Length: 232
Image (cartoon, rainbow, N blue to C red; front, side):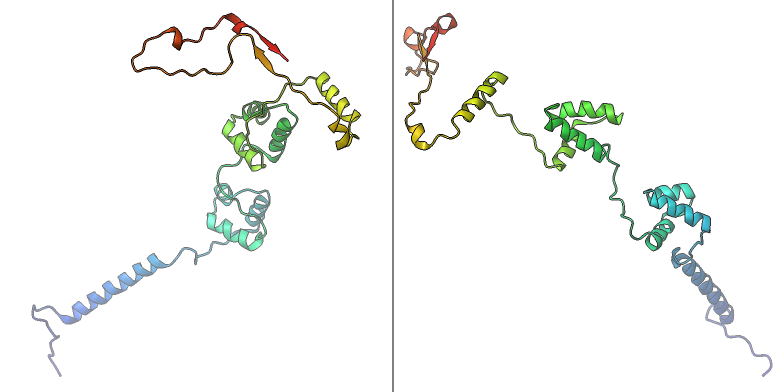
C-alpha cells in the first residue's frame, strides 16, 4: 500500500516517535538503576604481593584494620577480608582506648599493697605515675585493682602492739601450747576495769518540764581533767 500514514493519537503526536522516546527513557533508567544498585563488594580490587605481605606483617604485629587502612591507603573491608582469609586465628580487638596500665604495672600495684608499701589507691597512683610517664587517674587504678579480686575495706581497730608486745604474746603461747582444758580450769581469769573518781563517762538522763529554764537539777557538774580515774 502506498501513502500509508503513521498512526496518530488524539493530540496529533506520532505514536512511533512516542514509543522511541519511551524506550530511550527506559534504557537510561535501567542503566542508572544498575549502576546505583551494584554493590561495591562485587568489584574486588586486586592487591599486589608486596601490599599483601605488608598487611599480613602489620596484622601479625597486632595493628588494627583501620590503622593499616590509613597507612596503606586501602579500604578497611579489603583488610578485613584478607585477615579473615589469611589470619583467621588472630584475636580481634575488643575496641575502645588502649589501657594505660600493662599487666606488669597491675602486678606491681598489687605487690605495693600486699607488702604494705601503699595502703590506698591514691598512694598506688602516685607510684605508678612515675612509671608510665603519663597522667593517671585514681579511678583507673581502683578499676584495675578490682579486676584482680581486691576490694577496699575499712581497717579494723585493734590494740597497738609493739615488737616487744608481739614477742611476749608469742612466748606466752609457745610456753602453754601443750596445756589441756583441765589445766586451764585451774587458772583464775580477771579483767581490768576503770573507776572514775567523779561522775561517769556515760550520759545522765533527767526529766524536764515544758518551758523549764536552766537549773542545778538539769546540769551535771564537771571539773578539769574529769577528776581522775583508777584502773583495777
